[in-house]
Amino acid sequence: MTNMDSNDAEQPSSLRKLFETANNQRHELERSAAQGSSAHQDNLRDAIGAFQQCQQLTDRRAIFSPNETEDDIASGDLQYLLINHYLGELLRQDSTTDRQTVLQQAQTAYELYLKLLDTYDMLSKADSKLYQRYLSNRDDFSLLSTSDPTARRNTKITRYKQEQELKLKLRSLAQVPLALQTDDAASRETYLAEIQLCTHNTFHALDIIAQELQILALMPQTSPAPQPEEREIDYRHRNGIPNKGHDNYSDLLDPPLSQLLNDGKAGPILSKDGKPLKPFTLLDSRQRFQNGVFRPDHALPTMTIDEYLAEEKRRGGIVDGGGQTSGGGAAQEGDEDDLEKADVETMKKREWDEYVEANPKGSGNTLNRG
Image (cartoon, rainbow, N blue to C red; front, side, top):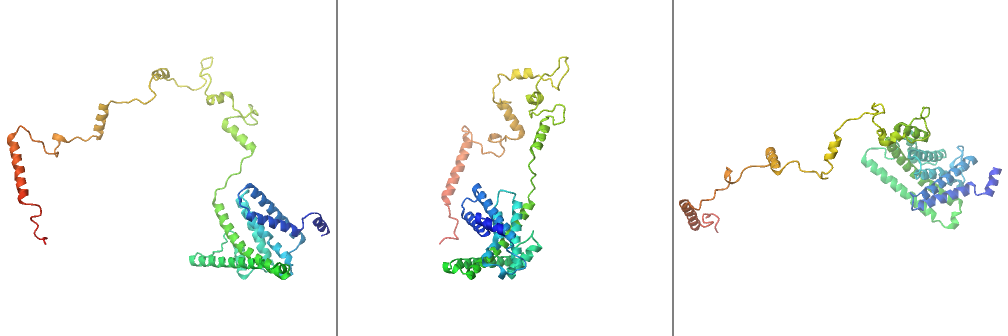
C-alpha cells in the first residue's frame, strides 16, 4: 500500500482519478457524432483500457470482499461496482476486432458485474430471478421467455416503465442542490439509483448479445488468411513454377519464357530432325484467310427475298385466301355490261326503299307508347 500511495502522489494513477478519467472518456464517446470513424474507435480503445486499469486496481486493493455486505461498502466506493458494466457497454461498441470475440468479452464483463452485485445481495427479487435464469441458460437467455404474444407485450411495457421510473429518479437526485450533494446519504442514494438503472440495462444487453451470438453461429466460418509462405507455394503450384527441393528451383516467381509466350504454345513445331515438338492440326487456313480478306465486315444475306417468302410459307407464316378465290369472301362486284343483272339489283334496292318508307322505324312498337 505504501508503494501505491507514493505512485498516486507522483502520477494520476489512483483509482479515483483513473475512474474519473475513464468516466469522462465514456461521456465524450456518448456525445461523439462520428461513432464509426477511426478516431472514435481509438478513443473507444483508450476508454476500455482505462476501465480495465480501474478493475485491476480494484482487485489489487481488494476493495470488495465476499465477506462484506452492502452496508460495509463506503459510499465513495459504490461507483466502482459499475466498472464491469461500463466495460461491457464499451466492448459492445468495438468494431475493429472479431465480433463474436467482442460479444463474448462484453458478456463476461456483464456477468462479473451481476455476480458482484449478487455477492452483496444488491439485486432485487425480480433481478435475482433473471440472474438465476441467465446462469441456467446463457446461450439462449431472453427477457421474453414465453411465446404468448400478450405476455411478451406486457413484459416489454413493464420493463419500459421501470426504465423510465429509474431514469426519472436518477435525474431528480442529480438536481439536488450542491450543498446537499456532499452529504454521504445523498451521494449513496444517487449511486444506488444508478446501479439499479445499470442492472436493468445489463439484462437487456445480455438478451441482445445472446441473440446476436446465435445469428453469428449460423454464419459460415471464414478460413484464416494464408501466410506468405503458403501463398508463395500456392502461386508456384498454379503457375507450374518449381518449389523448394526441385532441381529447377529458383527464387524468381516468374514462369519460364516458353510458358509466358502464349502459355507455352509458342516456338517451333518441328525439331531440326523433323520430329514434332508439340501437337498440331493441318488446316486449309491459307485459302480461308485469303477468301476473307476483301469481304465486308457485316453479315451478308444468306437467301433471296423469294427464297425467304417460300420458307415462311412452308413454315405457315403466310396465310392464303381473300379475293375471288376465297370461299367466304366479300360479295363479288357486278358486271357493268350485264344490263339484266343490273336491273334486277336496281329493283331490289327500290323495293327495299319503298318498304323502309312504308314502315318507319319504331312503328311496330305499340306496347311502350305513352
